[in-house]
Length: 167
Image 1 (tube, rainbow, N blue to C red):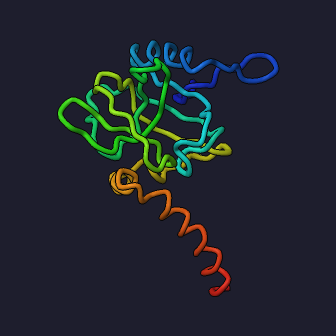
Image 2 (cartoon, rainbow, N blue to C red; image 1 turned 60 degrees about the vertical axis):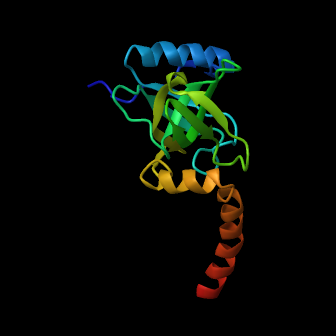
């Protein structure tokens, strides 16, 4: 029986690395054929929901509606690089996209730059769902207002103190 989960490309001695432009071309080709694209994330711009080293599965858009909160893969119009960020605003056929861990910078891209959406995040062999559901809408709103990163920092400081009091 064949697995429905796409495999990572692996060569002798480990995984093969690609440049951002090579990944963009590979992703565009694979997604354009209607197949899922699976790869290991590099970077921290989407932390804590996507961490450096997580395995991501991008699905083709097909008829998926591009909405605020959805995490999408796109080819950056200025650099040609492959990027995975969250839609924080939509105006007509333009999207504002931003990493969850980037406090104030966002990119505005045309809808046609989007080549897929994030369907799955795996960390240490386990699927992670937080940040991919309906809560994405709230995360997008907080990110757009520059509140997500400070709120996350405050919660991480308070949580250990609460756990000490409860224990």
